[in-house]
Image 1: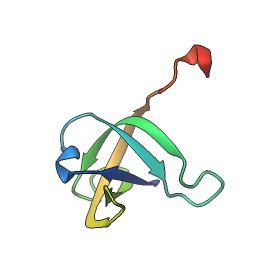
Image 2: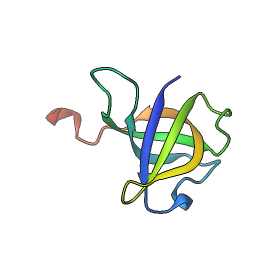
Image 3: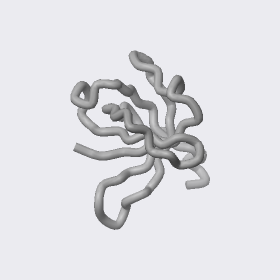
Image 4: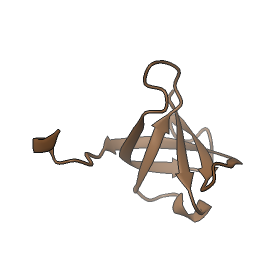
Length: 84
């Protein structure tokens, strides 16, 4: 189980039942902690529904008390492959 974090301006950005594109960062301990990824994913307000956990922070960094689960469908390349 991975732990992720996302920053949003409004909780409505985390619509359930849709494929979303979000920039998330890992909270897993180790060298890659706080590494960002741009992903296509699904989220749920039920923390047990999907395989990974998602922590939500508001625009100024306030931690939301609500807990979510997330399923990463695929990582989206932000830079064309020829430049990577």
